[in-house]
Length: 115
Length: 113
Image (cartoon, rainbow over all chains, first blue to last red; front, side):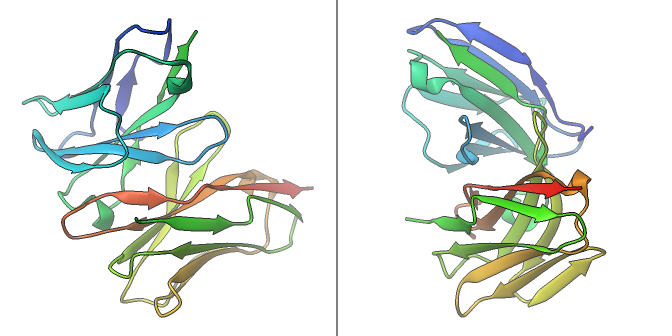
């Protein structure tokens, strides 16, 4: 158990809908990262928040948005869902601002299925 | 843009043999190179990492080497065991302003008893 929690574990929805994925980082970690992992694909970095502020952006679609709240939990919002958005979404956390210099601890992931 | 290439995509070895996975990165500013192991249906977990001021690092049966000039780094697993079977991802960081990890596409390692 990495200490990072994600809810829900599974999510099944229809095209055009909107969903919210939730992540709670390890106690004390200020950075939260979101990744998308499609079937048999690698991990695509979406976005990073540090202490409530957006820190870095990857290939995140405009239909996707995220935020980090004062208690440091983060939410990833996916809207106007398409079949291709079906994937495993991971959240990771690290203690520092510079995530590349310290280990990122991954949560168990949320499996999103868009029908 | 930033890119990390990883080879091979699949690797099958006999128990006890060695396995080598290679990655090449594009941004010479990268200075942190972690390796993650992801077992089927589970989260990625860090197994070893190396920073750009070090050429080699070893942890029991696992070692990582880094060649900054050639911009490539490799994971070496010796005396492989069936429990080493998993997908392995390399990654490279791009500081200082974009604190993100760029991951390779993964290598599926199968160790046969």
